[in-house]
Length: 125
Image (cartoon, rainbow, N blue to C red; front, side, top):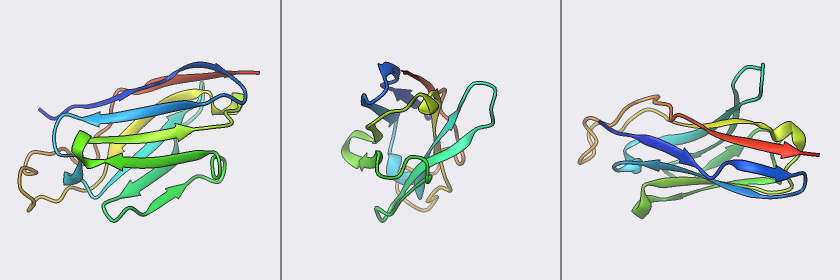
């Protein structure tokens, strides 16, 4: 079974930085895109950023200019570099796969629209 594991969360002060990782147990390029979402306490899950197989990226307005998403196919990992963190960035952060390239080698069993377990980010003022 394919696993998707987030890491890198923690507690930082406002203005600090964190780098989140989303590691897949197998070929992360099986999916057309990887998204990062977050869920602040008591609130709904919201989109943060995405990267697709062509390298195209997108960001929520609230994080543009502060966060940067990247992918390392060799490590089956996607990263979210978060700079200039604010208290309102406090949330559980999740990565999610998108649609899967079923015809690609090794991708037949890769999960589609699959969520990791999340990593907590806490930013204090």
